[in-house]
Length: 233
Image 1 (cartoon, rainbow, N blue to C red):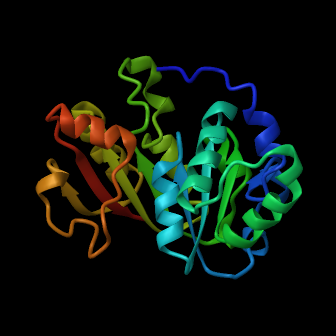
Image 2 (cartoon, rainbow, N blue to C red):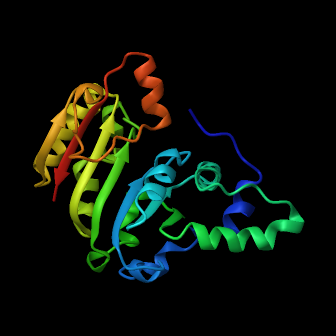
């Protein structure tokens, strides 16, 4: 479902201290964007941001970048982060003070707007990404659209240019999951773990808590099993 236009999103993003508007400037320099030099993880297609908001707050020893292409989505993600960190929406009179508060509180997360199909334009080998999260991406079911999938081997080859670690992937779509297993193999990744029923797989993420996305909760309520894998470059 297409996200409705949010007239407030662009202005809020442009004034947010944890949003970066021109990521092309930071290729191979992302470690300099954060207050502390720490392992860097990416979420591709962050949607409304509930996942990355919870993840970044829980793991202050890791730096995160969440990417989406749609302003409305990123605007919602910004607000999700603020809600998770306990930052309330400010009035005009409070705006400056509140922006300073955000800068102080949200130190290990950046939101960026970019086309993931061209992701190697903004990340390079020196960025040394340790993990990529891909959660419930568009399955693009029609054959002629398969190359748009975030797990397609064309995309996986791009990730290898800057990834020095693992990809964590979750989906509700059976065909996308089966095809993705083949994509990872053909692109030279090793499948470290896989499951066809994440809810009943204890400690699947290797002692890391499974943070449920909005879609994940919805699919579980519909009794649709979640498929997941960990792949290593």
